[in-house]
Image (cartoon, rainbow, N blue to C red; front, top):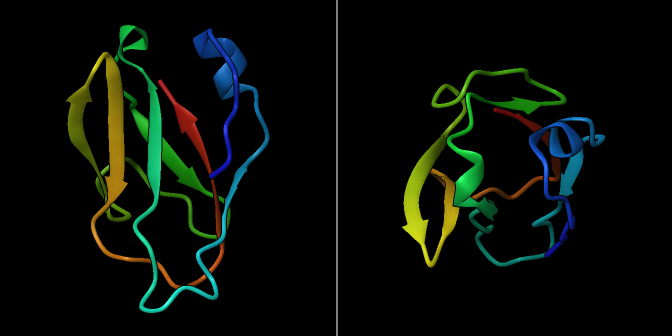
Length: 87
């Protein structure tokens, strides 16, 4: 799991694309984006190879757990991908 220790929306949005690499896992893995719920909901999860609005590319808000927003892919992924988030 890759962790980015950012506290502000602008700092998170200015980050380069985050790498998710589930290759080598049997059957793939769900991808998660988890951050402090006080920052609000995401408006967009942008894929490097296929730009998409939130909900168009298989991401959804799974819920809020212990003060953290949890977004997850709808399906398991078997290929490496890169994403950015926007609030």
